[in-house]
Image (tube, rainbow, N blue to C red):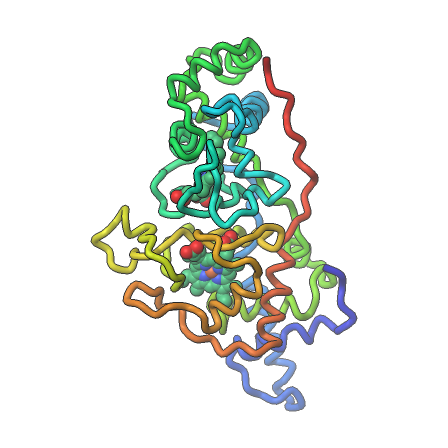
Length: 350
Ligand code: HEC
Ligand code: HEC
């Protein structure tokens, strides 16, 4: 996002509303109002600063050897029944760690029930899956290998395959000395690699860091809207822009989502995990069912397009956004893209 010629102060227009300040700009109170607005903005911005360290479970700390091993496994199609599908076939780094499809396609062309989500920034995320059915990355990683419609290879065959490759035996001995090569260590290595898949610094982060020209006045206004009138931040909160919670945002379809796991809680019917918005403009389609192709469609959905039903989240109400408001929200979301270096597929062990 290029800089703007408008003076930064213009961007605080929305904050006047935020601070419930009604003094006209010509009044003597305008400067005090502006200062109050700036203090509010600074407080909001503080909620989005990137963390310094990557969290990891105590029994699986991150080491370079584990990351390299996990990366090889993530990209290795020999972990699938047909020998042609790897984790990276669906979570493709050049497609924002998704697959560009409305619904994932697995071994033998089987279509999955839901869209492939990105794996960006999951070190901080739990539980996993659209419906939260896996508690940890380690637990999650075991599921697609054995799932008939995904990689379609039973765990014992995955383990036998990996053990038969001398390069993997050596890599496991270095990464997990004293531990067996089994489905748990395979999952631990994959999870460790996933923890290092992190979106880089974006123009939004540069702005948080004090570079006023890093994002446009429209994007700044969009950030304020996102946090106030449009209520987006009540779910898309924190530096990853997700509360890791489950909400029904009123999409059509009969997938119960989290409701299948916790059927007694009425608001979890049609509820899905809030996705991260980091790099969101660099991938598509959107939503658990891949039903939206553009961010414009997403904003229209929140403005007025949702289905009303008992489980619909309280925050989802008609927003009455103007064309300018929508443009501002979109400009803001586009500042979250980091345009990271291309991920190079590893040389697989043999
Ligand atoms: C055939 C396509 C496909 C393959 C292969 C695949 N995935 Fe996925 N992945 C998906 C889909 C679809 C979902 C969402 C399923 C759901 O939530 O019900 C998903 C969900 C995930 C999630 C949860 C993300 C979140 O935000 O909660 C992680 C992590 C993940 N996959 C990692 C992996 C790993 C590791 C592998 C390889 C061992 C893998 N996937 C293989 C399609 C695939
Ligand atoms: C009540 C919580 C909540 C609120 C409020 C909310 N979202 Fe969401 N958002 C979600 C959930 C949950 C999903 C995934 C829904 C699904 O797939 O069923 C989602 C999906 C999205 C997606 C698609 C991301 C992807 O990878 O598929 C975008 C973009 C988005 N929201 C932006 C916004 C914006 C902009 C606003 C404010 C106008 C907003 N959200 C308000 C919870 C919320």
